[in-house]
Image (cartoon, rainbow, N blue to C red; front, side, top):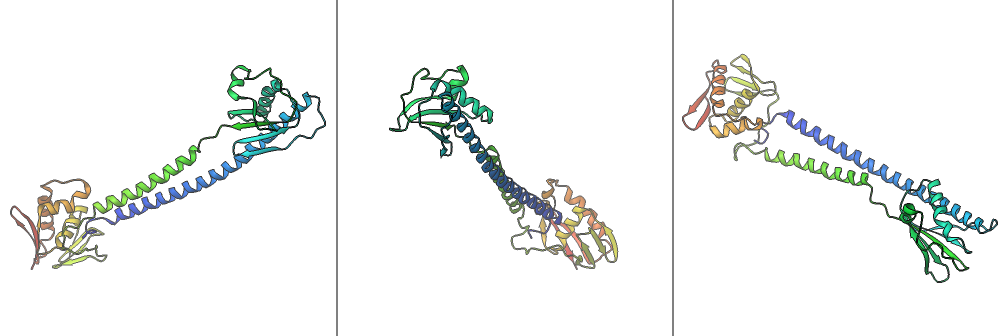
Length: 304
């Protein structure tokens, strides 16, 4: 009898909650897809900006060295956050920090970065600094040192960015949403215990439940007792349905209290006696039905 005393509205409400959570999860997945797409677009834009900034820097380094005709070398992205530009001739290292930062500012590049000047022939690091060195004092390590004539690779490495906070929030939302769904069904399972282990599950009859010379319509909360119609309260209908579906069976007081009142969070010992008294008055027109008390135990609805 797991569904005997549970109003249909409860199942409707649970269904709507589950549907809303499913809709929320679908929306979160859609937002994640859009975020990833935007992240990819932003990454491409960032790469283009770095490329332009390094080409500008290489151009002015050559110009300052008196070279206005050489082709600007191709900027290579060797890793996700590493860019390289090859300079075939010696340049003024002291001019590099301000010129590079000016190029980055022009293209609105704000990330922290490391700069390394590497010998093309042997791959050894010759000079270098971090963005913070320049931003704090406008002075970088190894300044004032002249480079030998030759080819150098100018390598810029940006600090790796942390995973997107928006993406993390989406996955946390997904996990919490799944937890809510699991919690709802767990609570539903806990509250769906049968009133009697051996009693079969009984649904509310749409057209009313007959007993004796009476008929109970739980859905509409009405009772027709030997042709006389009565309107019932919600708990009166629940209690009478419990008695009618267990006619001629002794129902203990604790069982009645848990079956009729526990779902509403209200358990009052005297409630049974008050409601039984009301039902007896409503059923007085039907001589075939009688609710009798078994002292110290409970009640039985007796059908003649």
